[in-house]
Each structure stands twice: as structure tokens, then as C-alpha cells.
Image 1 (cartoon, one colour):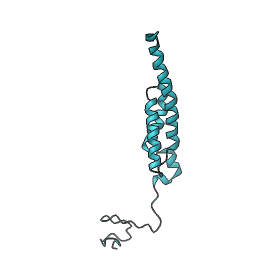
Image 2: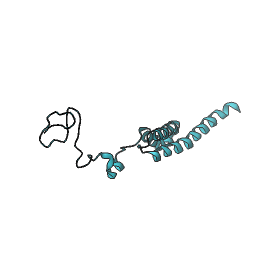
Image 3: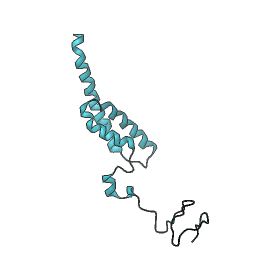
Image 4: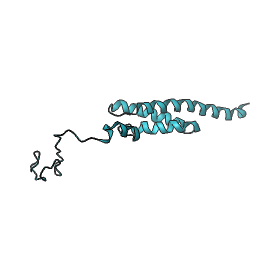
Length: 120
């Protein structure tokens, strides 16, 4: 059998050409990991990397120090999702923004509270 794209000889019944990358999609495209809903629940496939980072930073923002980083990566994730609409992770990005904003305000309050004795 020969590749219909470049003419290189491929194995009998072959569906992939190693020379040009042609693939026979007669039975439909191959299923990807992102197409399976169960795998999408277990693995962060098809999501913005910034959204994944914002979600985890949002979780640990109760420690106050990661809070501004959760806010920043959440904003970056929303911008990335707007640029690439096929990516998911909007919920993680919003979670990172909310948790980052709340605990950033707490971090500022703690900082001001610690400096208060110097001004009184």
C-alpha cells in the first residue's frame, strides 16, 4: 500500500505514513484523552496551565503569602482562556481570583496591624 499524500510505501492496511504524517481517518479521528469525560475529571487536560496553578494557589492562599500569586495567576488564566477559547479552567481561574483577592486583603491587614505599634 502506498501513502495517498506522498506516495511512500507503507505496510498493508497501514493507516499512518511515517514520512509525511498522513493518517487515515476513515473510522473517525482517534480518541484523545481529553475527549473522555472521566479522564477530564481525573487529569487536567484541555485546561489553561495558569488556571491549574491559580486553583492550587487559591487552595493554599489561606497561608496568606501565596494569595497575591493566586490572584495574579487567576487573572493570567482568564486572559489565556479568552485568547484560546478551546481551553477550559474558567472555574479554577475564578476560584484563584476570589481566594487570592480575599486573602491578599487579609495579608495587607496583617501587615498594617504589625506596623501599627511603630506609628502609635
